[in-house]
Length: 295
Image (tube, rainbow, N blue to C red):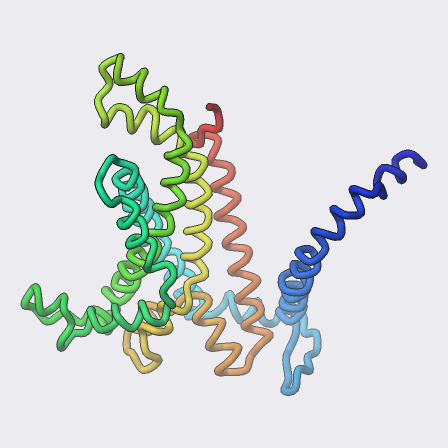
């Protein structure tokens, strides 16, 4: 025990603990403590000025019995279905093209990454103008008046297009880093064996980049489930299609900051975290079938 304790408090270990202390403290203060408080509030009835009292499962009973809640849950899942597969496809395609031998590819990389450094509110406002039914550029080009943002069947699709456009560059840069870590000797050997570029992509590039692809997939799923700002900016609160676009985080915002029902809103957050955890667990379970970690 004495030797183990001595090793635990070596001079190097003390410096290590000191260096990671800001991160650990920040994690506890900004993540762990707020989540614990949210969990407690989800079982409570809240009052003005921060007062609350424990009330059991009342918020969850109300939540699971609400058709609006289930609609928001489906909207969040449907948004994932719309954005993640297409977004991953375009990101991988972009990464492969940016890895090709073309002039000025560093400029193209910067251009594709640019939407990620622009404020989401600015992106939403620009695309809101593009999808405008009266003078939007899309309707002007096709010559047909389509209510992209007020039609319940199209509003989430319009938001998904915006989300894909804004995230594909960032995901492509991450995938590009994974592609560039693949040894060129694999491609040289495949070329000598007569493999085409398409065969090289499916037999070498895709398996080798699958770990990076898996990380990007997890990140994009989480971001899609938690979508809020994009929908908030593109769909007005007076929009008749709001119910068809309202996500779980949008519902949380409305219940917490508009209605002031923080207990019910906290229950929505806990459900969202649980939903993300389930989806992530499924992804980690399924990665064994398609993610290749062997070099």
